[in-house]
Image 1: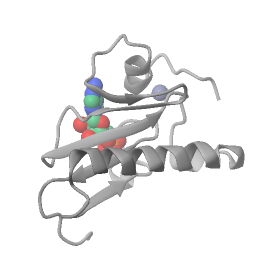
Image 2: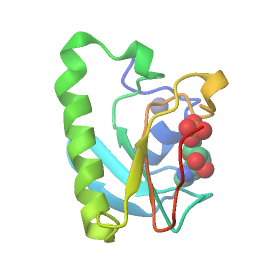
Image 3: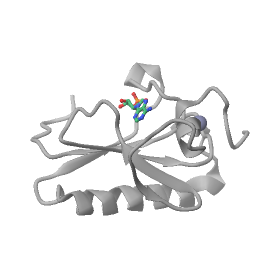
Image 4: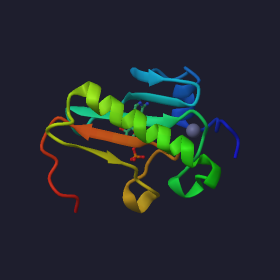
Length: 117
Ligand code: AMP
Ligand code: ZN
C-alpha cells in the first residue's frame, strides 16, 4: 500500500495541497473539521498514511488505529461534548456510506444523536 494516493482528497489535505481546518497533528495522525458538518461538532481523524478502508488495516496497524481512537476521544473532550454524548463512527465501503476511501473516524456531537438505525 503506497503511503500516498495521488487521487485521494485526504492525502491532499495531509500534503497541505487541499485546505482544511486542522485541529490536531502529529507524525502519523491528522484531525480536521468536516467540510459538510451534519452536527454542531463534526470532526475527522485520519492516519497520514493512505489506507482505503477498515478492511485494509493490517494487523500491525492496530496501534495506529488505537491512537486514532484516543485522538478522537481527546478532541471530543476538548469540544465539550462528552457529557451530553457523542459518536465515533467509521463507515466501511459504499453500502455503509463511505465516500472518501482513506479511513477516518467521524466524531459527531453537539446535538441529540438518537439511536443508530
Ligand atoms: P464518508 O462518507 O464516511 O467517507 O465521509 C467522508 C467525509 O469527508 C464526509 O463527511 C465529507 O463531508 C468529508 N469531506 C470530504 N471532503 C472534505 C474536505 N476537503 N475537507 C473536509 N472534509 C471533507
Ligand atoms: Zn489517502
